[in-house]
Every structure is written in C-alpha cells, then in structure tokens.
Length: 129
Image 1 (cartoon, one colour):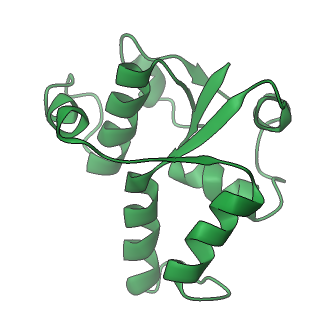
Image 2 (cartoon, rainbow, N blue to C red):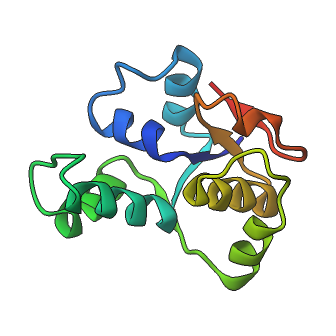
C-alpha cells in the first residue's frame, strides 16, 4: 500500500505517534508500504511555525528534512498538474493544503492518512485512519 501522510499525521508521527490510529501506525511502519509526505506539508508547517502556532525544537528548515530522513519517508514535490487538479476538486474542503494533498493522493494513487472526515468525502481518494 502506498501512503501519503497529511500534515497532522506527519506531525503526530514525528511526536511519537501517540495520536495516530493503530491502523495508521501499522501501515506507516510496514516496510512493504511506501509512505510519503508532500512538499505542501513542509509549506504548511513552515507557515504555522512562522506564525507561532507550532513550536519546533529547531528551525523548520532543519527539522523537516531530518524528520523525513528519520522516518524513511519519500518527499513528493508539488507540480503544476497537481496544483491545477487541486483547483478543480469539488468544493468539499476549503483548505488549500488539504486540497493539494487530495489532488496528490488522487493523481499518484496514494491512500491518504488523515483523521479529517471531509477528506474521505472526495471521490477517487482512499483514506486510512
């Protein structure tokens, strides 16, 4: 199974995974599965840290890549096709970061690891929680 972690799932994984569901922990930890994070998550975390809504132990420019490496995650870029696809989704979710994650998961056939019930309403996107 190929996975895409949403921002909160990634943050919870980095914080020790206590808030992740048992299914999410098992899927992320399974070496047979590919687990990825979008560059949109780096952008969202950077904005939250800059606004003081998220406190990290070191600067986000150092923390984010170290967490990707530590958890053996694949970092996915945001390409023009995905950005455009995110604008053409049904108006279920207004958060642009979540829309980018939905488009990324849909275009790359990834299961989106998220507790967000709105994301599960999108057609052609499988979620895991």
